[in-house]
Length: 325
Image: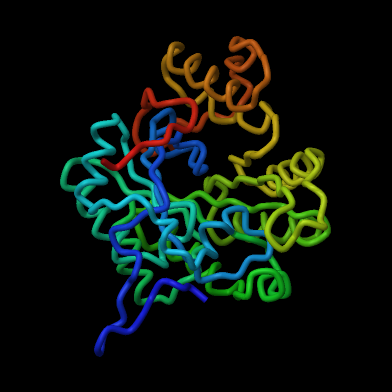
């Protein structure tokens, strides 16, 4: 399934080590991570291959590629860390395809980042056995884990995986590591967006992880093997967010839609007016809606400053592609 490992003698090797499908600089909120060094830039890259078989994959041209000639950029972990620092990034994100599939490369890059004061971020489905999980997440400073649904049937039928190992990873990360955790669920019409499933998902997070774990609901668009399903209506995301808040979650966000309200819980956390205004402007740009900054600083949102990891950065607002050489 992964397409990126082969036997060399008596060892299993990673064929994509040191090779990438491309390098970009993103806003950290694009991962999405809203509470880990908000306002900063993150140096993002991935390779090829995946250990899941999601029919709705939004990056299928990378994750399902068997063509190694897609990996046109080559760089060592040390070179990636240096590139990130040269471009004023606070962190490096392993993303686009699941980093557990190129774990050796990701962990070596994380080590290189830590040596020069940068942080490592994993954007992952969390589908990994316990022993490699300990080794992998020991290197990570923050993770956004895709909780793709909340039924075994959905996981098995739509991703080829199982729900229980992902729930184990979420509990492990939150309770047994120092890795900052945020969760994303892509809502697909008719498959994982029922009120009953959203009630169960958000209650589980509140009960098993705690109300302070940020949750992102994002919109599906037709792609890969699921082109016959319509895009997620904004109303579905609003309903999901309301359910999460009603079940006690403090920080529920919406993504892939133009929805300032689904971003604004974070703003009153900022201690200085200038910081609040700057991050508010950034969120408005991402949402592509004009809303006065003063309306987003009225003190009505929940204070969350104590639950930010790190301080504020002055990162880029949009994605920027970077050449390795």
